[in-house]
Length: 77
Image 1 (cartoon, one colour):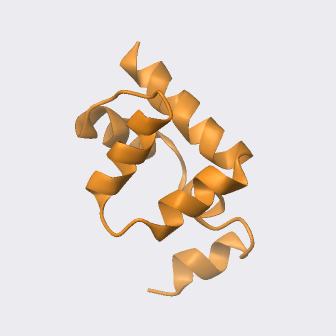
Image 2 (cartoon, one colour):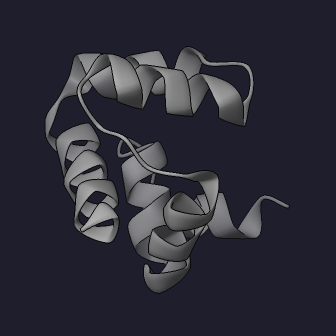
């Protein structure tokens, strides 16, 4: 159940530019959880990390910064 909530939150972020902007402006991971709760999502850090681990690096790069080609995110380190 909580896992679906994490997936729904990630999908909401992908579809809502204002929500994505809030997350990009956050300074730490705790801010992510606060923003999620403000929008009606409730999950633990473990559930959040589990969902992210199921996604590919390309999917994550597109969610975090959809305006940049995914390869630049992955190769800039």
